[in-house]
Amino acid sequence: MTGDTPGSQSALREANQRRVLRAVRGAGSLTQAQIARATGLSAATVSNIVRQLRDNGAVVVAPTSSGGRRAQAVSLARDTGLAVGVHVTATHLRAAICDMAYEVLAEEQIPYQVGQSTERGLRRAEWLVSTMLRQARVDRTKIKGVGVALPGPIDAGSGHVLEGTVLANWQGVDVADELADRVGLPVEVTGDANAAALGELIWGAGRDSTELAYLKLSSGVGAALVINGEVYQGSGGLAGEFGHITVNDQGRICRCGNRGCLETVVGGPYLLDLLPRRPDETPPTLDRLIAAALGGDLGSRRVIADAGRAVGSAAAMLCNLLNPQRLIVGGELADAGELLLDPIQEMLTRQTLPRAAELVEVVLAELGDWSAARGALATVVRSAASLDDEAQLA
Ligand SMILES: [Zn+2]
Image 1 (cartoon, rainbow, N blue to C red):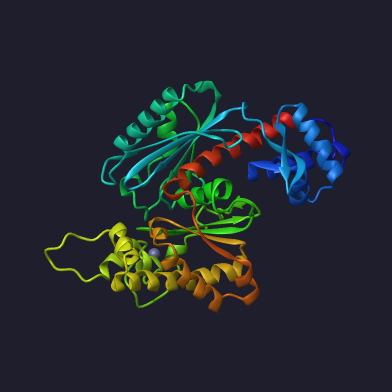
Image 2 (spheres, rainbow, N blue to C red):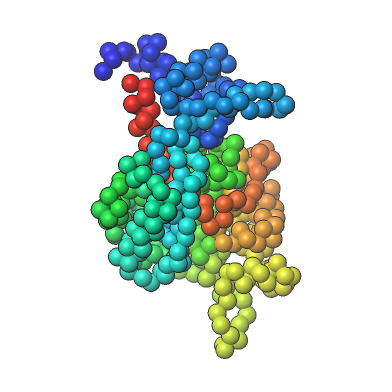
């Protein structure tokens, strides 16, 4: 305890230092002018705070140019630790390593089959992480933790995978505990849509924004909401269950038990079901549907256009409620590009408050299959950094 009251000068200075660190951490690197804009602090205050943070080793300052003028780029110090991120999907295990300044040092993936046991999945994840750490010659003592992104829903309190996940075998498993025992490092679990939004916010299509919605359009359909630069979890970690908005109360029964959810209209298996097929034909895949649409096949184009309109109509509700700067469209279906984005945009324009529709930019995710693994990294960096803030500011 310093004995300072919350309103005292040093409490104010600490609060301002936290604001600066949060802004830099959110963006990766900012000039002092950008920090001033992002935090609302004066240029002189920012300059003082940056000097203090540089002196205690929290940030590094390097010359850069901004709009043709010389400036100082402020970024987090990178030798303060490392983060590991893992993403488990129905088909792959992906892992990545980065430092505390979000510099990615390594990325690897191996196949995984959704039907395989959790035991095998955890063993494979442990092997992948250990192999990467060895290959990257990483000092394990520098690792702050392992972030794991899993297909949701995830219980925010326990970190358990809940009923309704595509990884049915992982349901009810305490992945954080089990993996922590195996790798000997602290493990933090998050839903993969939330992780993907964070990955895009830091490295991808969400850079330079603080308010965004990320849509995951794949076999499952989900969303994540970023409010004021932070992923919004809701009271139990279930915010953003976009796929389970009812769009047709006479529609098909959803895996969640409800009827006519958006996912039963635009989820991968439901889209593939719309295609005409001879009994002897091999079942189609989303990849092939998208390739056919891009190749000009009218039926496939129609499937994607209708999916885009259904997504756009549901996304219009999101935009009316949240007024985001960006709507990032990710997941396998995003490979359809403009064929998907145009109908989404059309419905947003039609059903969102005109000013909110003008303000939102509809863009494709930039990190492809890697956004959630990256986001898992970022959750570790953010948690470690907020603990470090306390230490550095003490
Ligand atoms: Zn549902």
